[in-house]
Amino acid sequence: MLFSDSMKKTSDFHNVYENGKSYANKFIVIYVWKNGSSSNKVGISCSKKIGNSVVRHRFARLVREAYRLHENVFNSGLDIVVVARACARDAGYHDIEDSLLSLAGKARIMQNGGD
Image 1: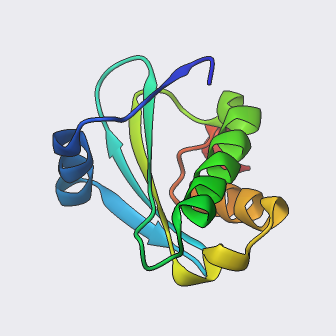
Image 2: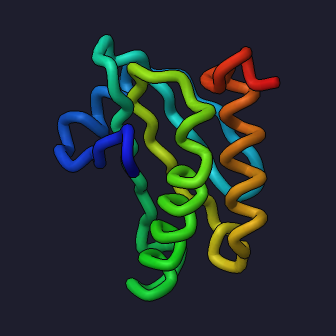
């Protein structure tokens, strides 16, 4: 991720959960909060309900890659948390990518308003 940092602190995640706005679809839920800086911070959350560590890490890799390939279309100055839903266990890369981009458009965090 060239323009973005990873969100690592639990307090950062809680801040986005409490203050941010959420958008959901079949595979993922995203929480978005304006952080006031010039770069984005992206966090990925996947509970043990989704599956074992292999399944959870695969989900994280898919989200990270989908974001990396499209990070130039996201507005800057955002904290974004991506949370897995139960259906994400069986989702492929294109499912996750489509979900991420559609929710980003719904949240209006893409440049040109998500068009």
